[in-house]
Image 1: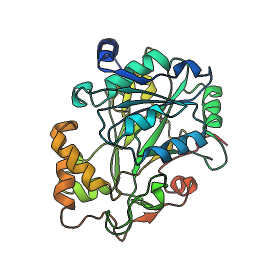
Image 2 (image 1 turned 45 degrees about the horizontal axis):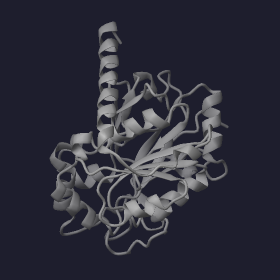
Image 3 (image 1 turned 30 degrees about the horizontal axis):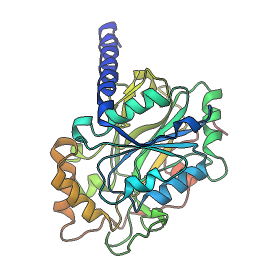
Image 4 (image 1 turned 90 degrees about the vertical axis):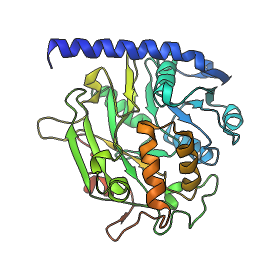
Amino acid sequence: MGVIQSYRLRLQRKRWRIRAFRKRRELTSAANRTGQIKRDDILVFCTQRNERIRLPYFLQYYREQGVGHFFFVDNDSTDGSLDYLAEQPDVSVWSAKASYKRSRFGVDWLNWLQMRYAHGHWTLTVDPDEFLVYPFCDTRPLRALTDWLDASSIKSFSAMLLDMYPKGRLDEQPYQEGQNPIDIASWFDSGNYTIKRNRRFGNLWIQGGPRARVFFPEEPAKAPALNKVPLVKWDRRYAYVSSTHMLLPRGLNQVYDEWGGEKASGVLLHAKFLDTFGAKAAEELERSEHYAASVEYKAYAERLKDDPQLWCKWSERYINWRQLEILGLMSKGNWA
């Protein structure tokens, strides 16, 4: 990368941080328990709206992985999510009634909270329907992974977003509060993925899976990006650029080995496609607060109106992280 391009990226990072500082005015604290955060706590950051039914299992899952504290921004929920989160002893939550789109889809809000509270901590930024699996996650807590990353002088850890779905209609089996959503959405596409390098930010750009296969079969380049860098040893100088797809400084996006080897990586099991999806998609389509005039949600509505299912004869049932490693969807690298 040239000197001029590097300078431009530094200026852009500064602008994102200034923007996040200004957007802090849109946040109102509903419960601030940050005083109880320990020096070595792993932190989760999340924006959400009307995800009350998902929250109990989400919190349980990451508590069991070893997360010490949760940061939520609630974007004007009407289902009791804010009150529920405010009651949790290890949660700090802020309310935001402002536009999700004008906050760069929540990125500005979380950038501010990370600037303010996450410096020096390993931070995991995920949505309520995303569940991180990583090498040896069945026997080693998240702390074991972050300790290894620290010892290896690695500051960021990537994870491919893997869309999970049920066999049959999405609305066939109702999701119950507190249930593991992967018990229902237990299938995924094992292939059908494309990877290319984003030269400006240095990250890999991954597309494919059921959302490309079902919703954008004629225009797969419009399918949502599946590459994420959700786990970062945070510094107040950092800033996410676009969701967790990429961040600055640019070096944090280089989570792959350019010399032919493999760096350790994980997978985010994405449990979006449950029986709750139809109502959620209709709400978000009406709000029109998502990327590119909600083109993704328009595609959902069009393709699922007559036959709401994603399963096909090539779908594979999820077993564990080792299966994902064999399929090449994640890697343990040199972590043994």
